Length: 361
Length: 129
Image 1 (tube, rainbow over the protein chains, first blue to last red):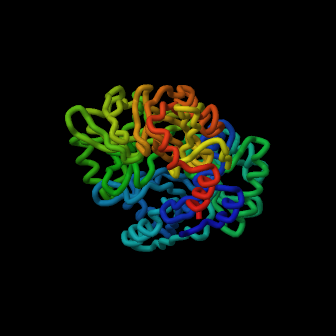
Image 2 (image 1 turned 135 degrees about the vertical axis):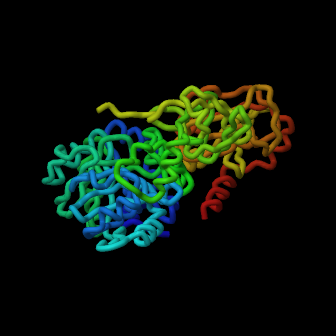
């Protein structure tokens, strides 16, 4: 199994470790509820070094990105990031990714752990002209510091003016002596930063952030809390809610498709779907009957059709059982009821507006 | 991990306190620890009857769901409503406030199949290695 440079520290801190996409990762330290609530109310730190990084450099880097992603990378200024889909010809996802523009001809993609090699292969295959594509995943450790207190904790650790970085922008500069990318982004629905730097600094920087954060209520958080946090914020998880068979429109991510930018892989399929209307849509639901609908539980509609829960859990901040599911368009309006088969019992659930949780700004 | 001496145990990590012809059932400290934060407990109704080894309910944490098996055959006489309302007491107090059901025991001889505290500890240790 693969390990991040912080593996030893996680074990020392008493984390429970699990296999996630072939990585030995902390699923929890003190418990997912405490960790989840800490991120909503104070701050949490996550080791997300299993995520991959792919860098595109050269005059043809932008044209390559425009061809393989759904969002419009030409709109990015240096220092700006955008959420995007790495497209396949079916209008679906090779992966979902964060695209950072580090310079006119230099882009940096953060990709899912389980898709590192696949993404790199797909991007390389599509590369034309004067561009180099490099899988630089092993050169970066990534820490996510998330929560309303994140900025206060981090600002004493860097000369970079973090408060000058808007949401979905980043800065490059010194962080505790390490040249870093300091990105105001996250996967929790909270304010916070994702910081990338070289692995040799990993243990020292992790420890320093924990020390600096303690007085503010920061605690380490694992993948269990990361999952419930992103679910409350209705952020898609690749492999669950989106994959190479779900189109960007079906995933209700139409806002990351920029029709004005010209052709890109899968565009014709999306255009056709847009014209004819999508047949199914990813929606949020909550349980009406008591029970927890978990990933892959069967879903039954009153017309006999079925589906399955793509992500489902009890979520600690809202303190209820929620989930995501692809439903036929006729069933996707808030208020529509359907049944979830919870280990043999058919229990009622209801489509609700999303995100389930939205922070006050 | 606590394993009170006055209780009997199953290999599925339930405990039972036998008092005369009645038994009180819950899950062990080891079980609650392995599950993590308990967020939902599903229990039967008074009057329901279960065979030894039959599932009578389930305990769910944020990450996992686990069935609870009846340690002895009998009829449910009382259900702990508090664990349904405040499932976290299964974590904080598995042997006392976190009890789940009371049973009228059908066949007292079945207790011979249960584990003592020492036997249960040995089982858990072996389970882990």
